[in-house]
Image (cartoon, rainbow, N blue to C red; front, side):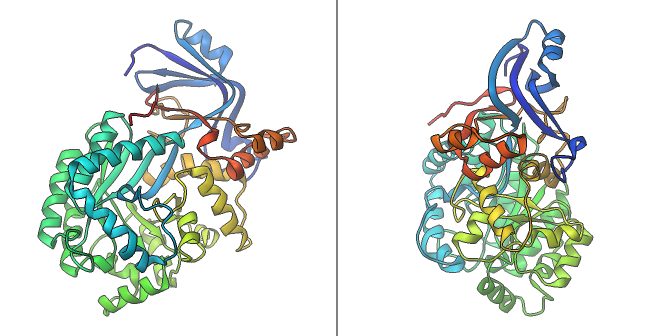
Length: 434
């Protein structure tokens, strides 16, 4: 990490709260000639370029004009071992797992394979402007070690964990309740709170965990209350039916996790599409966080996420790519498909709210707004540089754009990795390692 002060110059956008629309100017700061002052990996000032350069005349200036500088994107749900599963044709959830996902994950027992996939995975997310993600690794500790080691080499703020699975998975992809506990505990000790890494206790979902394993996961939560929990919830109707057949005494799907102490404000619940009224009440009471995965939900035909309905109950929703059932590493394309899913339910996703969602909004879900997701002084200097004219189609459309909201909507609907001019992690420009 360089100790030399650095100024990134360009048009800057950062959020202070979720905006209700373009007129809600108190919710965001936008500067036509803005600057971000970075020292030792943190933002020390954000404001007009003329003011910032006077504050630090010795700083190196990197001029990104006319591009837009924002906090790096945050992806709250994806699967590290599924980088070679993306774009696998033609199944719904349970068949897709058995046909494509599980055979791919078996390979992560090999440290060399896990390390090679980690290099590719981190190159891809950084190339798409994502600087923080929450990922499932495979059942093998080698996969989690490869994931966290590569994140540490790049000094990224990342969250992850090995999945715990002791049934309904093929040979080579299961642990036991005791081994899942022991391996997870060792990984927490090795990686949680080390550098910018945090651990997520990760029972994959109730179908692949016995009651004994969920009890072990609950014990880990009690022993490590500052760790996250990540799992899946109510993605697919067949999944729900199978889950409830395995836990016939449960009041509902979420009630299974509730029984074992796995539902709190640090719990990230992928999908959460087909929820019962009691489950919604429980999420509102506990602060559990549903995570919307639009490209995956469409690809697998899972259903439509009720963002407005959950938000009306005071529930804080995240949004994510869900690689590899998700079809793009791009949080921009995730917003694209999320917009369409909400349109089908007569719900609106204004571009200002959309970009708040993938920056400060997802940071709020993680409880890390003081560290990531804004350009506020004191936060970590994870920054994405966006070009709304990156492709011929975008450039032609941009000629007619007359507002920041229109520019953001162009990025949201037409943007992908080609719109990412640069990604900074802790103030350093990231180049591919592969």
